[in-house]
Length: 89
Image (cartoon, rainbow, N blue to C red):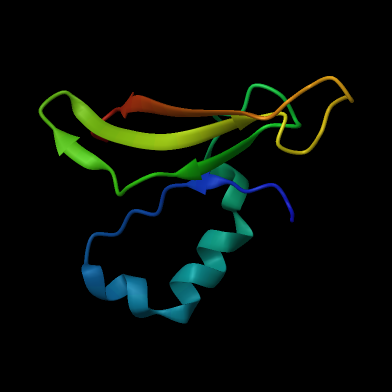
């Protein structure tokens, strides 16, 4: 399984999400939209729920799995739930 990425897509109008061209252009610049929460290359992250808008920012809950892709015989996978508060913009 390839490493996953958490990325943000923003639109002014919901209809943009149904345009294939929007997604082609977005995906071509995936690294510009990606949020990096991994600590090591052997870690894995996944979204836990859709972001929640608060007065202080977007609350994003995600899972962080350490050593998911190996990293040594003595390293065990460590599963955790984490949260980050993103700027509203």
